[in-house]
Amino acid sequence: MILDRLARAFDDRLRLSPLTRRALAKVFPDHWSFMLGEIALYSFVALILTGVYLTLFFDPSSADRVYHGSYAPLDGATTSAAYASSVRLSWDVRAGLLIRQTHHWAALVFVAAILVHLVRIFFTGAFRRPRELNWLVGVTMLTLALANGFTGYSMPDDLVSGLGLRIIVSVVESIPLVGSWLVFLGLGGEFPSDEMIPRLFVTHVLLVPAVLVALVSVHLAMIVRQKHTQFRGPGRTERNVVGSLLYPSYTLRSLALFAWVLAVLFALGGLVQINPVWQYGPFAPAQSTAPAQPDWYVAWGDGALRLFPPWEIHIFGHLVPAPFFPGVVLGGVTFGALYAWPFLERWCTGDRRQHHLLDRPRDHPVRMGVGVLALTFFGVLVVAAGDDILARLLRVPVYDVLNVLRVLVLVLPVLAGMLAFLLARALRRGDAAGLGELTRADLRAARRPAGGGGADAATDEPELPAPDRPGERIEVWPDGDVWRWRYRDEPAGVALLSNRAVLTEQEAADSARLAYPGVDHVTVPGPPPPSPPGRVRTALRRWGNAALGVSLLAAALRQRRAQRRGEDGPERR
Image 1: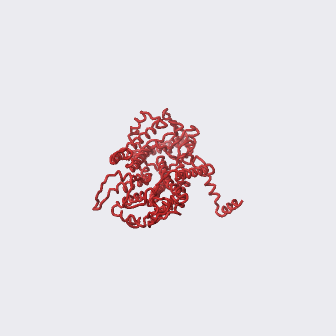
Image 2 (image 1 turned 120 degrees about the vertical axis):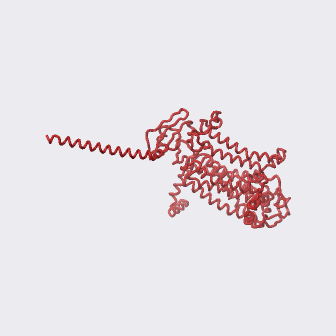
Image 3 (image 1 turned 90 degrees about the vertical axis):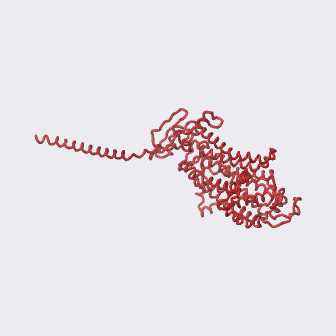
């Protein structure tokens, strides 16, 4: 009763009921891949919850402290306050180790969920118009997640995190002219400085999380405004969303996922050890530890530094050290390409339409090949970050492992990208429902260029039909001010044109679905407009029209004169 009165009071003053009804009536697709973004969101919530607890006990200071606690090997040792509080949090604070390890696992899952979510968006074309801005927000969130994960990894001031921070500092210092100034500005002095850990702490717990919260809010607001994308299927068009209502079905499903994410993260934090800082010891600039690898989400940068040869060049008298190319150039090109990809694909394909239906990866072989090439390239770099461990396991010299990985990082991505391109093209052109049904004839046909000698761009051929009716599709296209459709069965070589034109695309799709239920429709370009006539043809047409007009006028005058003569004749008699 009290809650009902409070709700009515708020609604009388704020008029929230119409907005609430509209929000609860929102439809969400049922496909499992749409939950990847929610896993990232719930991991971020777990990060905030556990991070607040850790903040109460962590001392972000580089000042000297004498550790006295339950970990006997360090009892009485002088370390930094940050490292001492990290060890004390792990050994003496109730549930401290559980929360700290859960926080670390949540960071790994958070970055992984964002990355897999972006991969899904990339291969299905969900970044196309009108969602380019949402793609840019997602890439920015990935960048900030990487930065925040690294700052949190570096704050305990243990030997491994200090070594990683020293590597990043060296990469930034390799930037010509401004590198040393950037390090001095970021750390408040030369590495290691007294202001280093406090600045990392402020960045990790305040600046980056605040921006991430703002970006998550913008991301969700754009999803609500633009509506969800969905995979092609019966009843799904560019103007509707088929799935579950926000309340109650989707809400219960989402809450269950939230509970599962928290359960898995806390299970990992309690059962799987990660980042045992007490074993590494406090950071000392003159010491290093091996084998030591960073977390997987920055391992590609470490692997690039290990594989790149020690080349140094001079530009206008300034030295460009070797870490500049694998550390700064590779990272800049990677994220620059991610930001620019929606616009590059639109420029290459000329596709400026709005898309609310997703593609299957096979429908765009070029995009498929580029994506697999990039993933393979960075996968090899991640493996290269553990070259010393591989050498120890294989009992071979580490330089032999490095030489093999240097060859693989150049050859394997190209081979994987070409193979993915050919398989996607074979699946798109043939009738196979999956990789297991491909034949040699399909693969041989995929190696031939598209008909007409043009490049095999993503829009050269219409998309394949829905998987429930292989070989069949309904093609809808604009024809001036009206829309037309036809039924096509490629294996049988049948194409039936509807003799009825309608005013909208939706009416054409509904007519086709009524005539051929279960067959998905695709929108294809209409017939090309006629080429403009040349000057000679235009002149001949004008003279012909003028001559026709003159002849019609003369015939009319002649007929009129004959009628007058016929009327005057009887009177003269």
